Image (cartoon, rainbow, N blue to C red; front, top):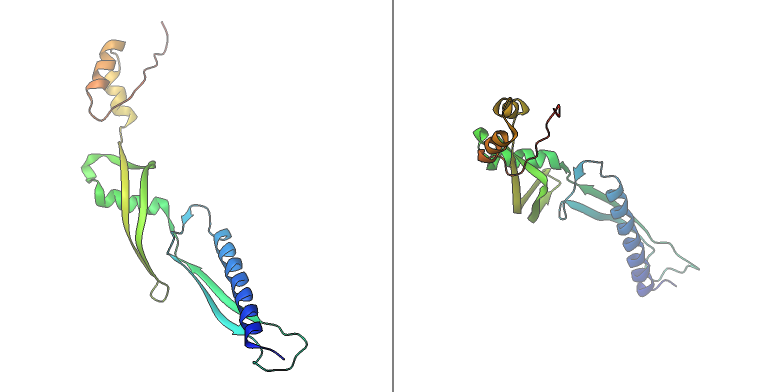
Length: 168
C-alpha cells in the first residue's frame, strides 16, 4: 500500500533531480557572448505524476515535468547602452569592459511580458579614443624629446611609448 510519506519522499527526490537537470541544461545552452544574470532565470516544475495514497502496488513511479527559461543579453549591447547614457558623444571615449565592474541588483524578470529590469551598480572605466592619424600629425617630424612633450601635454594620454623608425 502506498503511503503519503513514500509519495512525498519520492516527489521531493524527483523534483530536485529535475530542477538540477534543467538548471544544468540551461547553463550549457547559453551561447558564447551572451550573459544571463542571477534572477533573470526561471525554472519551474510544471507537473507531477504520482499514485494515489492507499493504492496497493508492489512499487510505484513518480514523474515530473518542468521548463527552464532565461532572459539573455550580450555584454557588448549593455556597454553600448551605458556608453550612450553615461558619456557625452563629443567626449570621444569608450567604456572598457575589462576594467569596469558591473553589479546587478534588484533583478525583476517577467517571462510573460518578456521584460527584464535591474539596477546596475559598480564602477565604469572609460578610455579616450585617439585616431592614429591625429597622433601621427602631432609628432611627425619632431625630435624624440619634443614628441614626448607633445604626448605628455595631451590630457587624453596617460601612458605612451615611442619607437623610432628608421633607427638612423
